[in-house]
Image (cartoon, rainbow, N blue to C red):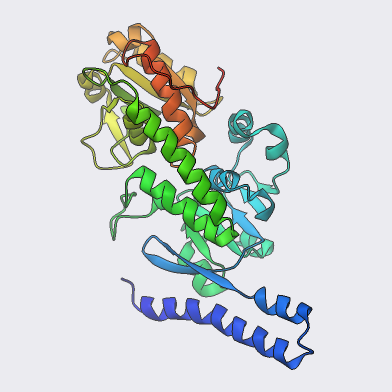
Amino acid sequence: MRPNDSARRLRRKMIPMAASLIAATIALAGCGGDGDQADAASQDTVTVKNCGEEITFPSPAEKLYVANNQMLSFFFALDADKQISAVSGLSSGVRELITPIYGANRIEKLPFKTEDYPSLETVLAAKPDGIFAGIGWGFNEETGVIPARLIDDYDIPAYTLTTTCLQGSEEKKGIMPPWDAVTTDLENIAKVTGREDIAQSKLSEIQKRRDDLESAPKPKSPGTVFFYDITVKDGVLAGGALSAGHAIIEDAGGRNALEDIDEELTTVAWERLAADRPDFFLISDYGKGPYSYEGKVKDLKTNPATKDLPAVREGRFLRLPAPMLLGTPLMIDSAELLRKALEDEGLAPESEIEPELEIHD
């Protein structure tokens, strides 16, 4: 724990508490009408636990800065679009990927500020009730947009995507299994936006669909699935046991090739990939550019270590937009799509699972 952490947390709680007391005093000094009561109520706050810290927001928050597409998925799931006052970190390529998922009308109405992650100046100019981002996904030491500084120096509540919370003093991300992280974020963001009923309905729906997947006929031996995120020097960045891909693969009835690696994402050498002899590849598509689906398939088909693998020769691949392979409510859609893909390849028995979301190449 950093020096003075306890004092800082106390200060974070006392600032909104003091604001509430001031507002109440002003209301009592007036005529005591309904308008005054509404003004006092507007000073209400809500506190949520995030990455081991308690963070206090105005409640319900009406001007929220969303700094990456992963966070955006939670706001969409809660129908809280109108409470977003600024959006950053969504390139034109990412917007192109998520438009078929959410619809062009919904994406076009978002208040975009910059395609890049925000600078400190951009955040301060927006005067938000709070900011939602991830470590390395909007929160960055180089820009100065980091939770501690925003909270302590500028009194801007800063919420960190749970899948990016650091493991204590270590630099490794991930403090809980992916579905637990999704549940935590959905419930917390619902409290901040005043949409707890919607969150519970959404979580119940997701659990029902997960139960249906769990009840689907099982193969005698689960097919080994390799979650291929991006190509890096001398290997690939792939999903370990704390990745959203791992949870998706397990829900679909497969076995993650990297289930023995207790990390979210990890670099794997081509030789390790080949030694795992995956039956199927779950491949993230980042659209056009160096991380495209087509580029990864080409790498698999030309690399000496992988080109002769049966799964590669027979094209056993599922292409999904990269935002669907992150820790968001979209994980359930990805799991359903993967289940049907495994069935099509004879790696899982036929079932009555019908994906609710259609993704077209």
